[in-house]
Length: 147
Image 1: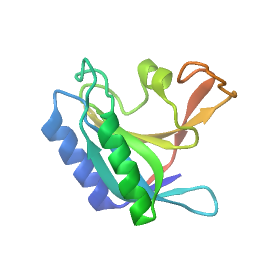
Image 2: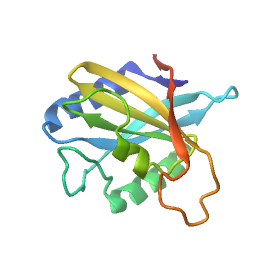
Image 3: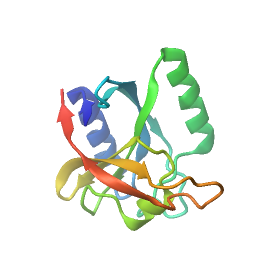
Image 4: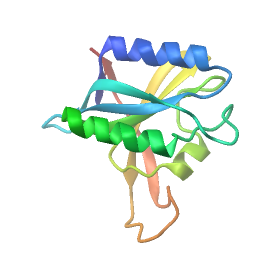
């Protein structure tokens, strides 16, 4: 389960609306609760540097490192990532699954048509040992609670 404050949800939705027709992306900061739920405290927007940002997302690597430093300074953990599907459902695409690299993190997906947010946890089924990103893993739908 992932718990997202309503203000964070609305900020992400607004970014998705403003960013269309391109996908937007960012990182979710927060903490893990004892029962394994993720509690989001903040969101960190990042530039989408994908070659085709209308149908793919790639977080700017330099921004990603700066966000990781900021999270560490604030005592937050990387609880997940988010991106939008401006013209598709709020579920991971095949490309999302191929490129997922953070096991046990949430991947929130904002859809504008229909207007929904879904969240999925990446489960890594194998030891990668140099395998390609996404190899041997799968997304599991998780409950998203707005707080």
